[in-house]
Amino acid sequence: MIELADFLELDLPALATGTLAALACGLLGNFLLLQRRSLLGDAVSHVVLPGIVLAFLVTGSTSTWPMMLGAGAAAVASVFLIDLVQRAARIEAGAAMGVVLTSLFALGVVLLEQSGARAVHLDVEHALMGSLEGIVWLGARDFSALVDPDRLATLPEPLLRLAVVTTMVALLLLVLRKELTIASFDPGYATSLGIPARAIGLVLLVASAVAAVAAFAAVGAILTIAMFVCPAATARMLTDRLGRQIALSALAALLAGTLGYALAAWAPLLFGSERGLGAAGMIAVVAGCLQGLSILLAPRYGALARARARSRGRRSGEGATARGGVP
Image (cartoon, rainbow, N blue to C red; front, side, top):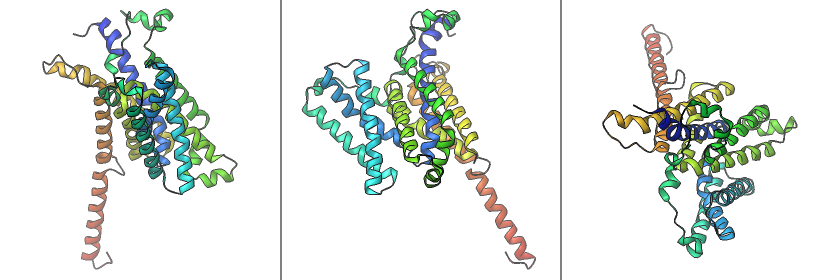
């Protein structure tokens, strides 16, 4: 039996943080998918290293805000570098991201090895899988804490940060949805309408970098990358309408966050184990499973639907041939 106090203090903050990270990245992933830049989250999760090292060298501190500012500065710089490389070299977005990713990550490794930052302990496991289980809300003993301003003010910093970022992402998509849609599908047409397609694209990339850094600090690289790709790709398999795709991607992100955390925290108890699974990793697994199901079962573009369509086409051709018609 799960105690209410334990749920509010230990599970609810981690569950909400993971779900908000999934939602913020998943919403932006729709437009990155249209622009073929879905792996921006992968790039950002690597390029934050030089920013973190430089932040430590400048401040001499490993506290949260210097690290976040350094990572954020590196992420935003990488966005502009990716755009510059893509336009200057006239290569596709994936290649530009690969160039910037490897170059900045290598720079971060060199800085780490050749500076005093090498002595700082960097937890690789937390960088990959995050530390959702360490996000707790002490003092929340009952549901009254959810409406008590004084207790709400003590919510964990990663949760508050992701709540702000997710709200900003939602407002950005609401305000610029028309411009983002046209610029993502046809930048040339957007420019002819007076829409600054390049500026809109950079706004999207900067917002994605901010969301990636905020999510990376709380849930690690694996979940961040998965959430930029899986919810949007899952929704894309189910519909051709962008508005419906955004709604379905949000639903997929929320489902991955809640179901993934529930499986990680409580499913092992059903098998007699007192140790849970990695929450961020399990959320990413659920997101991948949803993507797999959409690939298999989507009513129009799924593998089974396409196989049935091919089968009907062959039968129609065979019937026409048997009647002496043209197959």
